[in-house]
Image (tube, rainbow, N blue to C red):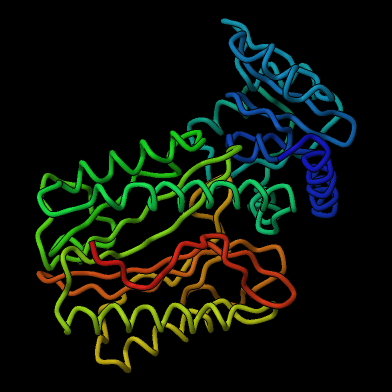
Length: 361
């Protein structure tokens, strides 16, 4: 996220922290550091209403100055670590600091308590992550470009997917195609699962060769400006049986029906139920075992989620979500169809625009 948007996000975070009785925060997660400051290197943020500091080491000092010109950059030394360096800036001005309690280990927290004495620490309660749930237009543009790259990459290699090629070869070919079209790197490890391997939702590409009559599930994404895309398409190798085609059509209808239901104000768990109930009613009960989707951004998996465990979370304008139902038949096959969508006042707009009609290769 750009500097101006990052500054607004930080101001909002500080408002929330002050309301909870904190004087400031220390931030360790790299995605939160980038979101709040635009700095992409390693280190730690020390922030209060009057201080915006990046604590890093020699390797990143120049980079921090370029990426976050409005921030003070201070370097650690061999004798003085991140906490002790931050204390030179915070000493005497803070009594309570928030920290990422879901990330900082007990051992690290103990060390910070020694390096930053006379300060009470408390949980930040995923404050930065909650801000990250609503994407800015700038963020959505980056995700949309990442989606465009991923779709174009798969379309460009369809002629190379044929019987005899291995899952591993297809995954490599697809990742290369994304890089050639401008991806910084894949958003995550590409899944290429054929035949019986398709029943494994997170299958690792193997040396199994594609065979006629197989389904091939490709789950992949590109990263652009630090932001991820996520798309899954299931392809038919040399034609598939009527039984397999029924599975595919069931997943496709479940996915499009759920997409049509994504509207601001709807409970996330209700969207999950729409796809899940359809698949169960079609005779595939128990074969869709994961959540329907998740948000994404600087990380491939973010909140909120389309899941039965989503509680009272609701769909909001500015969310970017995946919708990815599947049917997994152990020992036989699997089908998953996934789009990345942005939520507007009118509903879900697909950012992964590649066709979902069954492609036979």
